[in-house]
Length: 66
View 1 (spheres, rainbow, N blue to C red):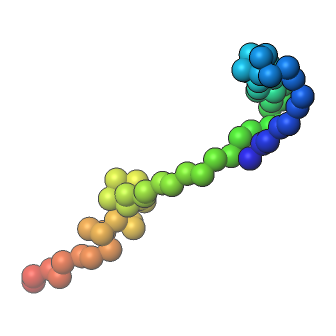
View 2 (cartoon, rainbow, N blue to C red; view 1 turned 180 degrees about the vertical axis):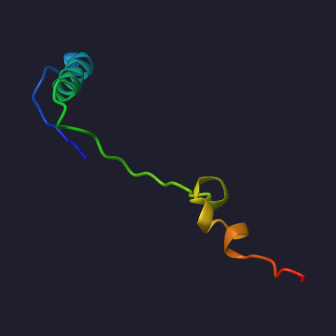
């Protein structure tokens, strides 16, 4: 989380806030060693994403008749 406090004329707050954040984001974009993290959630579908040997059909092999 990034929070910033600054003093400005109340009538110019919206414009100055926008300009300030754009400048901050531009400065971050100029550096390849800075990245943003955010909360994520990923669902893993083993049937389509898993290795072939770990898929349910590979783990359970029906007994052969014979």
